[in-house]
Structures are given as C-alpha cells and as structure tokens.
Amino acid sequence: MNASANHYDLVVIGTGTAAGAAAVRCRSAGWRVAMIDSRPFGGTCALRGCDPKKVLLAAAEAVDAAARLAAKGVVRAPPQIDWPALMRFKRSFTDPVPESRRRKYAELGIDAREGRARLAGRAAVTVNGATLHTRHILIASGAEPVPLPIEGAELLATSDDFLSLERLPRRIGLVGGGYIAFEFAHIAARAGAQVTMFQRGEQALPQFDPALVDALIMHSRRLGIDVRLGCEVGALRKGRDGVVMQVRHGDEALEATVDLAVHAAGRRPAVEALDLEAGGVAHHGAALRLNEFLQSESNPAVYAAGDAAATRLPLTPVASLEGETVAANLLEGNRHRVDYRGIPSVVFTLPPLARVGLSAAEAAAAGLDVETRHALVPDWYTARRVNEPCYGYRTLVERGSGRLLGAHLVGPDAAETINLFALAIRHGLTAGDLKSSLTSYPTAASDIGAMLP
Figure 1 (cartoon, rainbow, N blue to C red):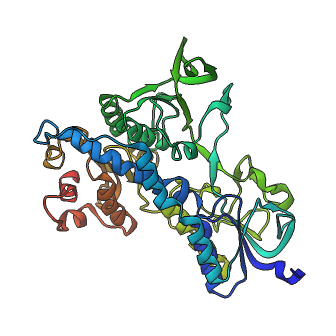
Figure 2: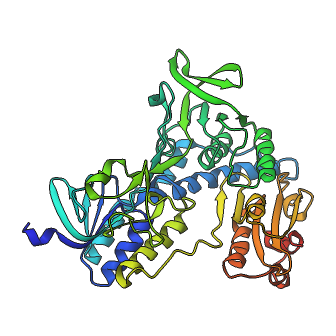
Figure 3: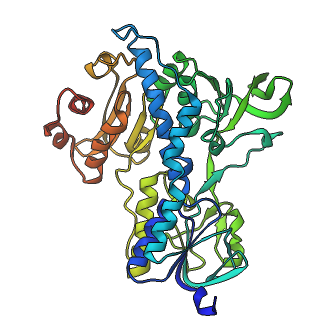
C-alpha cells in the first residue's frame, strides 16, 4: 500500500452506534474515512448490550406473564426457559452483525480495519503497524467495566460474559445496583436462578425516582431476587462449592457462595489503551475534556461521541445523536450542539422502570416552581388486567406555564408510555396539550391524563 493510501479525512475509533453515524455521514459527503475496532464490528448495543439483552428479556416476559396470570385463568403448566435454546436464538441476532457491518462499510467505500488503535500524534493513528494520517479523529470506542478495588476481582464475570453464557448457573451474585444489575437479575430469576444483588450504597438506581425504585425493589424481592442494600463486596475467593463473596454490611461481615459472580457496578469510557497523551488529548482519568461541540479542548482535530464521550446517559439514541452532531460539526464547522432535552431512559426489568426530564430533586435544585403528582396505582385497569402489582408514576409540571418538566414510571408498558412524555418534553408541550390528546383505549398511554395535574 502506498503512502497516500494511509491518508484520510477522518479516522473513527470504534464501530458502534456513534461511530457508524458519523462515519457514514462523512463518507456520504465525499470524505475519505477509515474505521478501526479491536473487537467484532458492531459495537456494544448490537453485540453485547441492548439488543441481545432484550432478546433474553422476551423469554423472561413470557414466563413472568404466565406466573402473574396463573391464578387468573392461565391453568397450563408454567413455561420454563431453555437457556441454551434461548442463547442460540440470541446469536441469530448478534452473529450476523459483524459481517453485515463489514459488507456495508465496504459498499460505502469506508476502509474498515481490525486491530487496536493508538494515537500516534495529534492527527495520526496506528493500527497493526500502519500509521494512518488524518485531518480529524473521532473517538467512539465505547465503554468498559470500571475497575473494582476488590481482592480477587479477576473472578468476576463481565456483562459480556453473562450475555454469552451457554448455561445459566444456579446461583448468581451481582456486584452493583444499577441498570445492568437489575436487568440481569430479572432475566436470570425468571430463568430459574437464585439471584443476589449487592449494592454498596443505600440507594439503588440513583438516577431514577426514589419512591418508584423502592417499589421496584419490593417487587424484585417478591420475585425471589435478594436485593441487599448497603452491602460492599470486599473480596472474592474460590471455594469448594463456588465463588465465595465476602461482604460487609455496616459492622457485620457476611459471606455468600455463588456459582457466578458478575461485575455490574458501572462502566467508564474505554480510552485507556488509546495513548491519549501521544495525541495531545486532555483528560481526567477516563473522562475526556470536551467542549460544547464534542471536540477535545486540547486538540481540535479530535472529537468524541457515545459512551466514550461520557456526556450524558450511556444510551444508544444519545450515541446516535452525538455521532450525527459530530459529523455536522466536521462538515460544516463547529455550529451544532447536542440537544439533550427529552431523552428517555429505561431499566428493562419486569416491569420496566422509566424516566425522562427532571427528577423532583433536580427541579428543586434549579429553583423551579413545580406541581408534582405521584401515586402507586396497582388498582388501575392497566395493572389489574395483567395482575401486575407494581405500577406507579410521578410527573412534574411547571406552575404557571404548565410545561411538562419530568415524568417517571414503573409498571406495564412503561418503556413505551415514557416515549410520549419524552415527545412532549422535547417539543415544549404542556400538561394541557398531553391531556387534550386522544389515545387508543384501553392502553397504558390512556392513563397519561390521570397522571397529570
């Protein structure tokens, strides 16, 4: 390959959602683009995150529905999850992705390379011994598990490992109390595993409404998930009968033996291996220092997007939005800022927990005059018809303007209903606008009017 072959307008590190959005748009504008990934092409969401997780969740939903309705007219033997068969079904989604992405990039004329990327200057990247010179670099390398200061941490499985299990262990211990922990706990419990969650703090899922989180925790415990708050895992060791988790709860020392211990205590930008210093990219630990245009504060040739940028919630729609925004700034100059209003976030438990907009605490901190409506409503038709005991909401509306500021849901179809609240917040609609809208009935969305002041 001659020297000019290694000169590009844009080199993208990563092949996930943010990377793909930026690369395709810049290539469509006639730019010469290269993409580099040390892992199979496709990124976290398509291969190791949201997509495969929801395939597993579909089976858990079927088991959950049958269990809830067992006393309400569903009399056949309860269904069970065949884990190996379910994993084969999951792989029918994930296995084709890398080759599909490779073929797509080839058709577009994007130079996609496998290997570990490292910055080799302010406008250069090395991969597999070759140096790629470029006008711009986009860091979209995703996220990785946060290193835990736990003796024996090498015994922890990752979320990637869990989503690739050929057989589900009987006893599972989850370190953490966030999205990953709750979602895996609900899937594994419905597949027949004994699940224990160890959350270091007294509050799980701190990004969500505390009252609704408490309702979800109570419901999780009713399902047989042992949720332990204020419990810090200090060490892991191999025992005769599995992995021994040494846990401290206040002054009390505890031990739990499991067949599989899983790291579910958070993720950080996967940038440590990029040699940021060589590229003149300022950072604080794993956090890149970026300006409002997602551009490096210290090296204007470098941008970041998606989980690697760590700007807001690590969500696929956010990654796509940031990738598109970076591409627009590259092509048109720094004129575009990401609009983060009205981005919903969901914990895919059974039932799901969802939020969009401000929390009550955030609204109070901002000094907003807010009218709040909150209730647990398992007696509403939406919950009763599926015998779901966990259903509740909180909404926040600005006094005077009537502007919807936040919505929080737990219960049936919350993952879908929250999108209507998100639409309202993103486009500045009022509570009156939502209440005057007509919805199909009876649906979960038809409850929205009763949730608003």
